[in-house]
Image 1 (cartoon, rainbow, N blue to C red):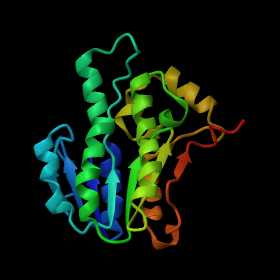
Image 2: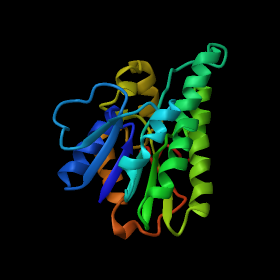
Image 3: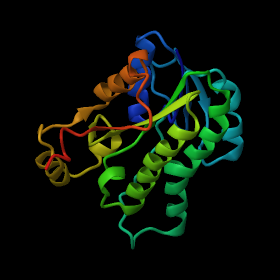
Image 4: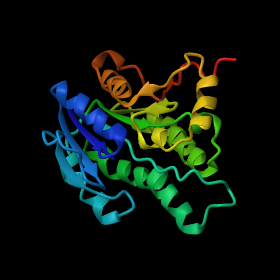
Length: 226
């Protein structure tokens, strides 16, 4: 398969690209910061989802992609009162509008029978202490449902929404007290790793998932169980 990954230089992006390459797939990925060593088997394109010119330039390298993997995410961890206008614009651009505009450009040039996979979050399902982060993730979840109707049968659209993910900046920058709250509300008592999440993403790209469309797969250890 040819996989185009938007936001490939993120911690989850790097883990996903490594797993996809090891599985023998062709990967083209975007970056907005230095790419880690060991992933030079992928084709890399510098792109900022806030830049119209950068998004326009993605059409050619994304042409014929079987999978569009949307990985960008920005979580400042701010309260409602703490956000300033520039931060609001950045979070909305990275977490929603930039990805929306990327889909606008890339979906028409993808292969027949293609698949768009959006990396969501438990915050998009149940809210967050960072209200804007939760709202933008929720918007992507809603977008997936709308596109799942309008883009099929040519392209399916689904969301994978993990809880806390180890091996990521968000996990490493979260206080131990907050992590402990997450563990206590997670029935399994532990979090998924970025590598295991990458294997989940790889698996749902396989043909045996062909009826998955408009779905949100929650990977949070059973956090929503009452």
